[in-house]
Image (tube, rainbow, N blue to C red; front, side, top):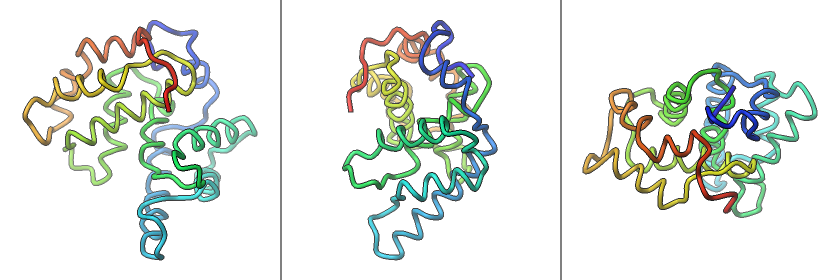
Length: 198
């Protein structure tokens, strides 16, 4: 699995080669984790959050912790998304962030899949903030692994350029606008100037 077409020696490419996760598994994992997140809200816990144990246990349920290396990688990525340090995260940004690792395909296919992961109801529609969240999540994951990424202002600019005044887009219809945007091309070619910033 490659994310950056011109950076085959990138950390993301190396990690993709060892990850066992695929599209079907990631979508199963999304269902399990969102169910847990919504259940925790009903039980009085922080809204839509899951624990590290719930995340790793759910990975085991879909059969994707085949090695200590897989578990270590996913555990560290969980830590990256745990901005408060309380061992609880919103699972969707993490799942979006690792979505490029679950697909063998070109950059446009990876982008479509990230949008499908975010589109939990399968409507084909995304709001501006959801698209920003997709780019931010992937950007953060790639940056955490040490590869160059876009600045947050560039992510905002990319989102703004593609959406214009539209509050919601049909992402399948706008995928070419996103995939061909100069800032997205800068990202996938590994030409970003920023590194891990969380």
